[in-house]
Length: 98
Image (tube, rainbow, N blue to C red; front, side, top):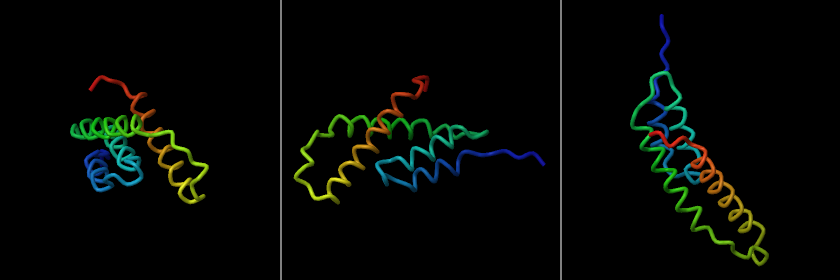
């Protein structure tokens, strides 16, 4: 039997992931969908929407003074900065063909 790897389930998982972890989880699912043997065309639009959000969040990140924050709040800010920066970089590395 021929095994075809459909992308639609990954698109649905991306939708279910929502904006958890600053959209990193959803982005992974949409990229898996696009790379599947039978991709789902809607994933391209979903991915572009997330990349647009990432660019907006990246440009809104403020270089705030973190020395006065408690360690747990500083960690939270650092994690946000890392994930948002990662998403923005990922968007810059994507081909602009679609």
